[in-house]
Image 1 (cartoon, protein in one colour):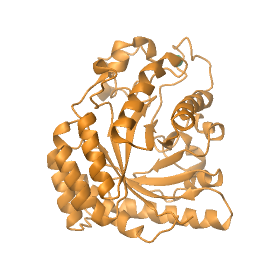
Image 2 (tube, helix red, strand yellow; image 1 turned 90 degrees about the vertical axis):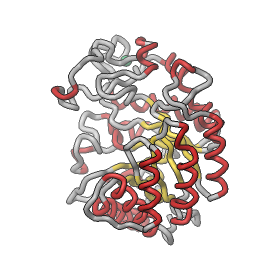
Image 3 (cartoon, protein in one colour; image 1 turned 60 degrees about the horizontal axis):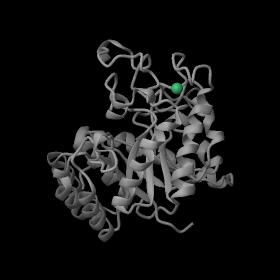
Length: 353
Ligand SMILES: [Zn+2]
């Protein structure tokens, strides 16, 4: 392959008021650095025309068009992220889809006024949609299609990280079903629409496909309940974003396992420069080893995530830090994110996947 490395940045967007700053960040910050891939997460902050009652945010078509045009001019591929399956709200709170359509809620018996402070994350984390009620896709596909068409994009990120609420024993449709099969079923339904019908590329977070026990991962970056077996039940033309935000003395051997299965993988780091550097070094080792072993998968680059919602102030800080080529070892937050972005883009400048 002679394709250039994916040098990707992730941002969360819902407010149309950031449009001009976002364009400025792309033009004056990201593009000169060589960043060529911008994942914009709308979770669920998009001003949908197809289901206005599900809209939660002012960013919509005219802003998408503007951003897409600017991105094209500076060589950046925009990849919208539409959160599927898990994270249908934050902790006990439900998003508009589950509030208006409780029949899609995998855990309707869990009230919204639960106490997140006193509930362990793994006991109840966030609401998911039910993996066995396919009517949900009547509300999912039109929204994905709308965002994709507004941006004129060719790759969509479907999220699917940290899906803990599935195969719930209280769900009459899912009770007793296999977690991996339900997870894979959801991936395959999305893939049928996105890849087979629409001809777009599909991307997703990889944490549920990592066997945490085998790789020495914690229960966030990997799965401890058997969902990981879905890896063998899904197509390998899905681009996997394999996030790791902490050090791990064993490295990240899951990356090589994905490469063995023929997937294209990009590791994803966050706000700690030291960790992002370690993750990328390990991923490059995995890539080399996989090539030597003749594995068919590709370690295609890297993504740096930013989990604070993009506001003008944040974008200003990111732009200034990136322009200054900051390499801040001690700060997290915006300065840490910018430092990771600068490091990643420079390190992968001449990397050929
Ligand atoms: Zn269910």
